[in-house]
Length: 162
Image 1: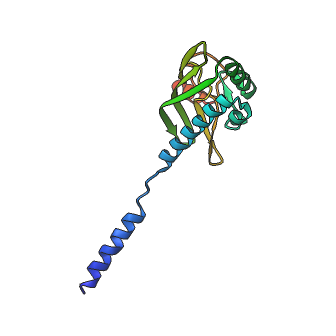
Image 2: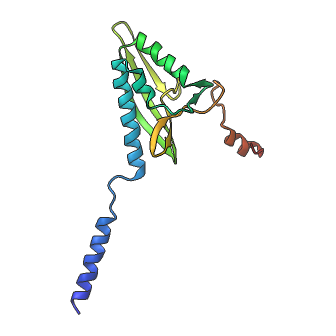
């Protein structure tokens, strides 16, 4: 009879230990996005534009620009700066979408510039999880205007379905 409470205690302890997950999905997603941003900064310094573009979703759309425009912007910045250091401030995750808030420090021997993202340009700020991997996706908006609501936001504000 005394073995039954001991056995139940052991089972309860085993179940509680096996259910302890040190890294939940949210934490793993943040780590993956941080790793992507780190890879981008390394590829930037190596001049590896294809390496940066490997992290971009095929349906990238940001402020009316496609991935081709992003590729050109990266080439322009590589021509102007030698170093990119991306400092992650925080990452917002909502299901399969994420926004990385960063300070992107560009520097060369003659100048330094810091973009506060996504507010300034946001090229590397918007992510989408596709087939289990995070990719840069853009804000999926056709307009460059700030405070341009997404179609679903308009639908809820006006009651008109899109």
